[in-house]
Length: 278
Image 1 (cartoon, one colour):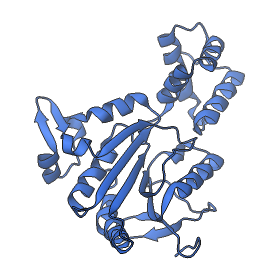
Image 2 (cartoon, one colour; image 1 turned 30 degrees about the vertical axis):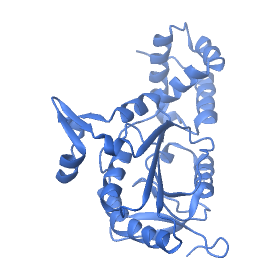
Image 3 (spheres, one colour; image 1 turned 135 degrees about the vertical axis):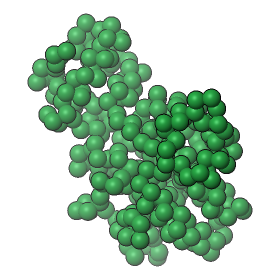
């Protein structure tokens, strides 16, 4: 099917999507936006893109559906195993020692851009096993895609999606069903799935571990910096940030400290007698 967007229409929609979500569409990925708009026009039975634009400007629910359609939700369990090694072997021991010292035995985790749930469930498996039993655990998982959140809340995955889950976790935390696996309630109950647009404040506070992987790669520099600054504000005084393998804060003027472990690279927020980097 031929493209439906004229240059002025492409600029109109790309600017709208950027303003609403921070997602940046360049000429290189113009065809993706064109295809997604064709799908939405067909579903909503709009005559043309101008008619559709007028429609979404007065229909917030359709705006959410459009943003859902242009997001990429590729993920898998234990994606980038080096980061999960870092979580288990470096971050958790350090965080537990700090929390014990200040007598606050609780950990709050945010999986931002959780897609269909594989990431927060992977985090939950590790923390369920490795966090001391007297610690309280809260995991918040959010995404721009309502459809993905519904899948994540259900916690059911076909066999093709289970690859990468270590055998002990698979046996302990999943129920085998006819054509797939169901995450057990003891893990599902640890996670609160919710809709959130990273363009806006989350309302969260005192986040100890924040995963936001393969999300800000779709933002331009200004939007990336705004998101990272919001992360800083809502994270605890001794906390850790995980970004995607192809994402980096290098060259960005932020207050996070670069941390290189034996397994991966992460970032740390550290406040002691005022805001200081370690």
